[in-house]
Amino acid sequence: MRNGNGIDLRYTPPGRQRGNLAEQGVKWVKKRVHRTMSATGAHKRLWNYCVLYETDVFNRIHQPKNNRTGWESVYGNQPDISEYLDFEFYGWIWFWDMVEKKA
Image (spheres, rainbow, N blue to C red):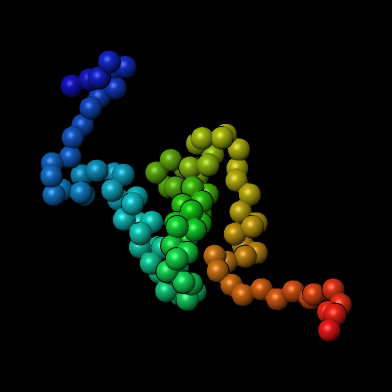
């Protein structure tokens, strides 16, 4: 069956998530988010930022099936992963306050 744009339509039977490739990606992201949140001790309220972080990482790692990254497939150039190597998802920061406090 095709839609009006000539795209093949496929349906996944109810209760059979393994047949849908998108569900496999969702499962991978959920597993990574749970692992990252547990490992870093981040507060539960930050789960949505962790999802963004993990999906960004996933889009920038090599996919053997396509022999390229998801980023390359969309934008045509290799992604810069230096920000993900320098910083983790969650961590404490310290800064020096140079302002004099008045009593």
